[in-house]
Length: 423
Image 1: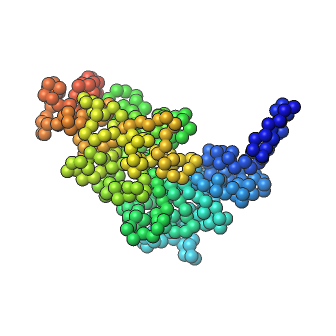
Image 2: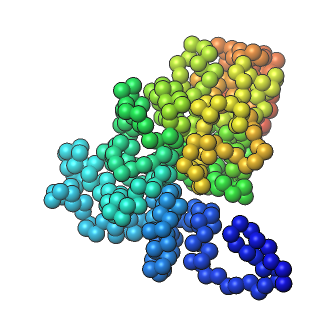
Image 3: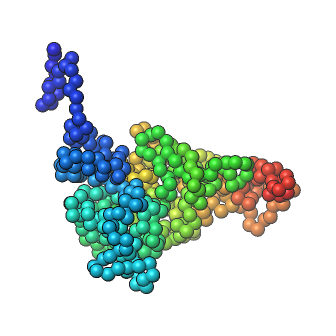
C-alpha cells in the first residue's frame, strides 16, 4: 500500500475510507466557510442546537465563519416575535404602543423585536463577527438603523434594507450624510455597501443556476404584458433570469418613481468611493443641463437602436471603476466587500447602459425597450400622432410610450377588436 504525504498529512492510497461525522467535516474551517453561507438563519440555529459539540464548534470555535453573514429576513415572524417574550415592547420599564405620540417611543416600539435579537447576539459576542447583515422586508426604524451604522459593537460592512418598513427615505439620507461628513473620524463609516433600491423579491442566487425577478406573466398581447414592463410595480409573479443580468438584460424600469429623486442622486454622488449602492447615477444627465438623477432604467448592452452606441460609454463590469458600478443583488455570500458584491462568474465582463426617466422621455419604447440616443433622434415637441398617420414618415420614433415602427402598430391591431383598447 503506497502512501503520499500532503503537507503534514499522510494519505494511504487504497486504504479504506474512514467514515467521518458531520462535526468532523465542519471542523475543517475551509469546508465550514464554504457551507455555512448556504444555510438560512433558522437552519443554522437548529444545527447549532443539535448538540453541545456542534454548538461549541459553530459558536465558540469559528464564530467569524458561522455568523459573518446574518440574514434575519429568513426568520419566520412567529419566531421573531417569540424572541421578544412580551407581547408589547417594553423598554426601560415603559410600554410603547402604536398610538404613542412620541416619535422616539414609536421607533422604540417597532425596533423592539430586532433590538432583542441584537441584545442576545451581543451578549454571546456573536454580533462582533457580523459583517454582512440582511434585514429585507423587516421593520427597521431610523433609531435602530442609526445604532447599527454608528454604534459598537456593530461591525457591518454590507447592509441590505430592501423593502424595509417604517424607514423613510429622508431619515435614511440624513443618517448616510452624517456617516460621510467631512469631520468623521478615521475608519468611519464602517459601512461599505448598501442594498436598498432593488426589489427584495429579486432572489438571484450567486450559484450560476438562475435567479428570479418580479415580472408579469403574459396572458395576452399588449403593452402591459411584456416581460419587464411591470418591474417597477413589484409584480408578485416571477421569471427566471441569470445572475448578474439585472442591468445587462435591458429590463426597463427597475425602481419605483419615488426613489429616483434628485436628493438620492446627490447623496450617491457624494458617497462615491465611500459607500456603494445597488444603483448608479445617470451619467448622461451629468453631461447635460439635467440635474443628477438615479439611473432607474436598465437599457441593456445593445445601445441605441440606430447607432448601437450612446454619447456616454457603457458601464462594464471588470473595467469601469468600482465606484461607478452598482452592487449586484443579493448581498454576496462569501465575502463582505464591495468587490464581491460587484463580482460576476469568472470570465464574464458584460457592458450595459443605464439612464434616468428624464433622459428617456419620448426616446424609449416601454414595451420592447428599444431606444434612440440624442445623436440619432430628436423627439418633436408638441407634435400629435393620429391613428391614421404614418408616424415613421414624420420621423417620430416613439409615441404614447411605444415605438412607432413596431409596437404601436401591433398595439393598434391588438386593440382594434371589440372590447379592445381602440374598439
